[in-house]
Length: 422
Image 1 (cartoon, rainbow, N blue to C red):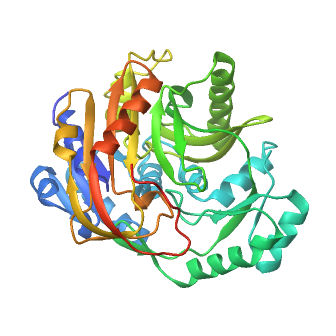
Image 2 (cartoon, rainbow, N blue to C red; image 1 turned 45 degrees about the horizontal axis):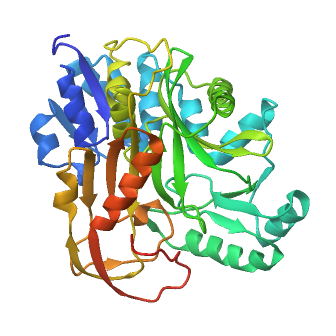
């Protein structure tokens, strides 16, 4: 394939841009000004710096860009760019998951409403309309139940209400999140709407899939390693340790879910719990999963989900016709510490240099303050490694995270999840 093929890439990372260039296409990059870096400036064939979440600005700019560069598809692999990419693809007549589908995957209340309308709403849920709605939901559906923002990711703002005694505290937390802007990466956002869902007891998994013109191929089932006292993800491991019957239940449930939701093209990352009555979808995204899941999938199955996500809209990859067979196992384990001031960091280089380590990074340095652990954005670093089987990969990552030293002088914070230093 020659460089005459062109894509409009909405947002994304240096990795996305680098992979697109490896495919041999020209890239017109539509990027948030605060996200632009030297790599993107050098390697994008054209760079348009704009708030790509503002449709009134993006649509005329995209029309002008197409008249100049004649791009063949609009692609986004990043959360904030999914909706606008879907709208642009529809306006230009390109294939892809439709905007209404992308939107109801992002908005958890829309997802629940759609499933209910299709007769697939097996999980009791309701919108939070005031403090009294919390008690009403608990009386109807029982305790515990979950409260969470309708439009957020990474476990932000998830509250477990164990009984009536938790209702006042849950409402205070909701008001706090509504009143104060919260940081998501380099951008502040405001939480407005919340929903309530019945709590599902059971282990949690994610399913990494790719849809080819309405046909859904499950690539991997990922086991989630969760903090026992909250909803923070400690890590991911795959292939998930499941017997064939449970594996089949999960993959059938997700395939049916994607069909009902109307997903047609591209990567998806669907989170579910295997409850007493079977698999229950918690949420889903029409993108690749975070937490370095793509690296784990590539190490275990030899499938590059980023390459598929970029290549499929351009007609540059073949469909996956058979379920892939794992050739190894892989795990990501995140590094956390209790709140405090970082005094020293060491051991990252020696861990990263190992042949069985895919990547190892730490994102804090001496003098920085570590805040309370509340969601997945409070991770301080990670180790991703591969091994012969899943249990060995998990054990290896746990050992390697202990070799990474982050010395912290502790602070006292209310409401954080205490974690022993790994």
